[in-house]
Amino acid sequence: MTADSEKQERADHESGHDHGHQHVPSDTALRVKALESLLVEKGLVDPAALDAFIDYYEHEVGPRNGAKVVARAWTDPEFRAWLMKDATAAVASLGYMGRQGEHLVAVENTPQTHNLVVCTLCSCYPWSVLGLPPVWYKSDAYRAKAVIDPRGTLRDFGLELGPEVEIKVWDSTAEIRYLVIPERPAGSEGLSEEALADLVSRDAMIGTAKAALGGDAAS
Image (cartoon, rainbow, N blue to C red):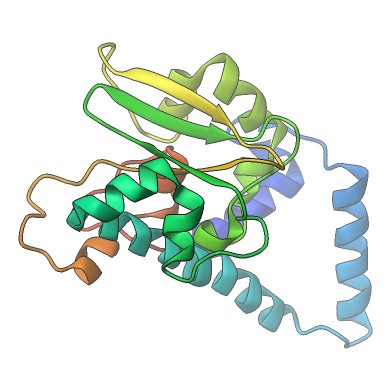
């Protein structure tokens, strides 16, 4: 997902067009929007700077960290084993822990199993490895449908899985947050760890996409 499409996503969410479902902004969302408008009107906040700040944390800081964790797991069997046993400690060893990432669990995709993360109560999310949560992750539509119809939810994102693939849904909470370790793409053999990280998108680490050659770590 590009920065422009992410901005459009935010606009669609605010106008009630989120993955084909009507959505009425909450009182909190309306108050935040009103406060933002007031600050902009008084010249206290530069809209372009605000967009750049949000974009930086959504696409660069967090997702890039998570992508490096995944790439390390793909290339280092010992780190992968540690990550699956104690993701909190393994990720901390790379310096990527902090607020909203204190209790982390890694779940690994395989040809037989695909993992999908949702927070059914609010928007619990591992900021330290994924950045700020995307608008659709916080939407009522995603939070409800991911649990009731995970296969259909993935289809909404353009990801079609065969009936032989089991889909596991993980409910992120204030106590535990999840990081999906996507399957390593075929044909990526011989790539450096840095190049592998470029194949890992934010959505792949949530479970709504797969890592792929030519992938964009900012999406």
